[in-house]
Structures are given as structure tokens and as C-alpha cells.
Image 1 (cartoon, helix red, strand yellow):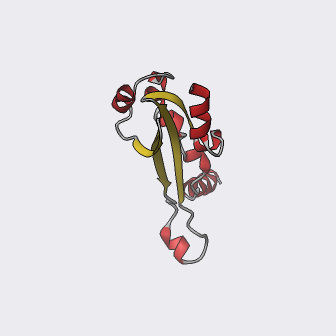
Image 2 (cartoon, rainbow, N blue to C red; image 1 turned 30 degrees about the vertical axis):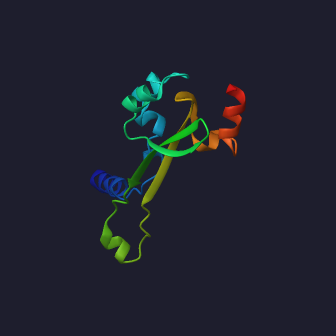
Image 3 (cartoon, rainbow, N blue to C red; image 1 turned 135 degrees about the vertical axis):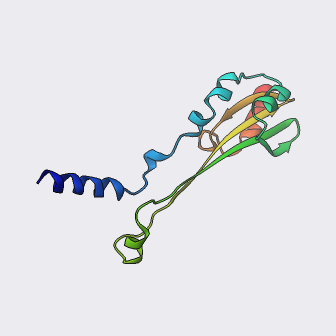
Length: 129
């Protein structure tokens, strides 16, 4: 009886599908670099901390940079079971971004895209002028 229960538990654990809890937040992945950020820091310091950041756009004295983190969580259940139609494979592809806005080559604001209004570059320019 105990061996049957153990076998069932092992099968259930081995058949677990990927979940959203397996995805690491972008803030956790870049925690060390984000701790060094300070509003007003020069663009050169930012580029040293985040060499993977790429320019996303520029308007007058405002420049936007972006960091993108793509995570793929594969469904590691047995492929033969999927071929038999016992389940549909469910890989999870998650893309997270952080935006960084600079005004006159100084960090003015940063955050996730959903943290921002529709046209943040106009708001930043008005606040700083």
C-alpha cells in the first residue's frame, strides 16, 4: 500500500505542468543593478550598470532605454503522453521590460511599461523644465 502511494506521488510530481510561479520577476533578476540606480545619475554610469540596455527612442532632450527579459518555461511532462492526447503541452513564454527615461543625459524616471502614462516623454519634459 505504501509503495503504491509513493508511486502515485512520484507520477504526479513528474507530471506537473509549468506555472506562472516559475517565472522570476525582472526586478529580482536585475536587483543588484537596480539598487545602484539614482534619479539624476549620468547616462554613462547607467550604461556601465546596464550594458544590455538599448535605446528605444529619442525626442528633443529625452532619451528612452529599454531592458527586455524573456523567459521560456518548458513543459517537461512526458512527450509520449502528449502524443497520445493525454494533455496539451503548455510552454510558457514570458517577456518583461523595464523602461528608463533620460532628460539631458540624466536619469529622470524608470519603471515597467504598465507603470507609465501613455506619453511619458511629454510629462518628463514638462516636469523638469
